[in-house]
Length: 329
Image 1 (cartoon, rainbow, N blue to C red):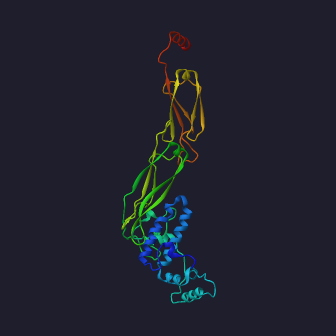
Image 2: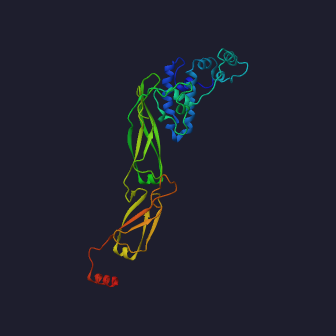
Image 3: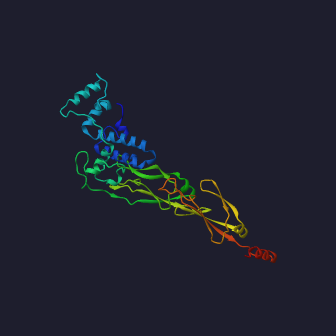
């Protein structure tokens, strides 16, 4: 039989059109490429396979030929002289002169959800005919179709270290949600959501996983939204795209110069030579040693070093006299 469309949709051979619709909707929502940006190629192949299975089995004529002749008969690839090739040839010469044509997976998806899903879920990369023309592939106007209510978004904080926001990281978050299977029953299902934290992301950045909340009858599942939050760092504070660090130095270092070393967020050692006199409140700016700028790849903010000069709590008379003599102009 080649490809087993019934197995792809996880239904038996006696499945009704309603059974097929429920099975397809569940699997299409699960494998839509927009939900798998980290493994989009795999998701696209699976989504196309699911859509083709539904397109064949939901069409009485295609399904009858498939049940009798398998995929080879349906697509006209059965070996010459075989029972399947003979049956297909006879069927294809019938009154309707059937000819199989593979359709766009997105067109099939749009038709299956035309009463419930708006264009927000459709891929952003290229609009489908449903979006641009307002009709499905059978010419049915879906602009006035009723829409199911969408559940409120589920929002969660994603706590990231300053190192993660500097270098970037991949976070995998396991969730459990309820999905509706082909018989209409709700069952728990675990899934792993992958978030690629980009260098330079700021606190408040939001990452949305469309319709990954619980599935309920007559409801569009909620979006799951993660909002970036920032862990405090032991040395650095963030100010927009800049990094700020406070360093304490002695009065002697402030007047006589010194060298300070800093461990950067990407594990480099940064050496800073202080040649000028450092007065209280002095700030040294080092260009392009701040945070990466998310919208300007390769560019960074600045590092701002603020110095606190520690004055001695007491001096001997000899020390006081010596300092006066040295500082007299």
